[in-house]
Amino acid sequence: MRPPRHAPSREGDFPVSTNLKNADLHARKNAATPRGVGVMCDFYAARAENAELWDVEGRRFIDFAAGIAVCNTGHRHPKIVEAIRAQLDCFTHTAYQIVPYESYVSLAEKISARAPGSHAKKTAFFTTGAEAVENAVKIARAATGRPGVIAFTGGFHGRTLMGMALTGKVAPYKIGFGPFPSDVYHAPFPNALHGVSVADSLRAIEHLFKADIEATRVAAIIFEPVQGEGGFNAAPADFVRGLRKICDEHGILLIADEVQTGFARTGKLFAMEHHGVVPDLMTIAKSLAGGMPLSGVVGRAEIMDAAAPGGLGGTYAGNPLAVAAAHAVLDIIDDEKLCERATVLGDKLKAKLEALKADVPQIADVRGPGAMIAVEFCKPGSHDADAAFAKLVQTRALERGLLLLVCGVYSNVVRFLFPLTIQEEVFDEAIGILEEVLMETVGAAV
Ligand SMILES: Cc1ncc(COP(=O)(O)O)c(C=O)c1O
Image (cartoon, rainbow, N blue to C red; front, side, top):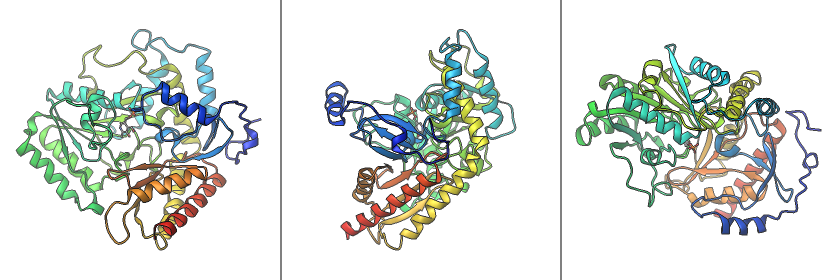
């Protein structure tokens, strides 16, 4: 029998009866799949439940990666499993553009109603985050009749050609894959720790208008309210207001890429709610459907309608199983008050990391809204990135059964993406492992 949702699970509850061995699978993987699909772990998943997962050899891990910010509602939430099962009994695919279904329409109604801004909005669904970004750019170009897009250093927007062009981090995402679509420009993202002020960033956009592209040819400015892969750098409030002002002055559309920040991670349903600034378009994906592939673009109705019929969509876009999961996700976020829980858990983790600063001089910064928390490591007494320290922390945590992700332009940031449904006991266990690992790593480094 499955344990109650918030009770800690025990390994014994999930016997993993497999004869598979991680080492054998690793050898088969290397022979069968290209190295370009880089894989972080050398163990293979057999089963997962809420914030824990087990490998094929029965080893348990606490999952602070959550499928790269996808499982804010945990692995296999019973309500999501139930919703997908119920949809399986009806139909699994019709292609929405051929035979539509109510669940897509009602999900669009819910997302449009809950996205920032009281104006009329419309929502279209796709499959991946990169696809949402591609479509947001297509819509912005169709609506403005302009080609240019401005993005930011350290930003990440996906692995498709336009996604890569917009991404502001070369290695490993762009190396060897050019040429990229033209008319994409990058301005520096504000980063107080590394000496880039809000004024510097906003001035750099004005410089782009002088040096690279006239403002009247720019369709959109796209940014992440909190940069994800770039290191969990939150956009300061005056920067977000500044972007809105520049857009309004020049008839440019503001696109908030909420693929990683959305669905309660930052303590609000959408991170833009922290700023009271309304974007024209917003991209969503990842935790929208709790592990099922679903993404979307939501925005001002008249802008969303700029693309001609047939211009948007995709064979699998808005798949009914994924849409059913998304309805359940929205209910769970409300029922289990996950926005509030994100803030409570995030504050607890931040307090622990702040307290550890005294013993771990490599901790240069602890940051992030809600549960979108990261710790940045630098060489003691400086702002020189210490990627080796971050890597050691990640490796040692994994050896003890805690799955952590590294991010940042200099790969010196550890980010925490635990499911917001995590049981208190499992959360405390993970923080205990983190503390031990930090103390051990600082001991080795000094
Ligand atoms: C902000 C942001 N945009 C877009 C993407 C691309 O999403 P996907 O990997 O689903 O294509 C990501 C993925 O990490 C992301 O964090």
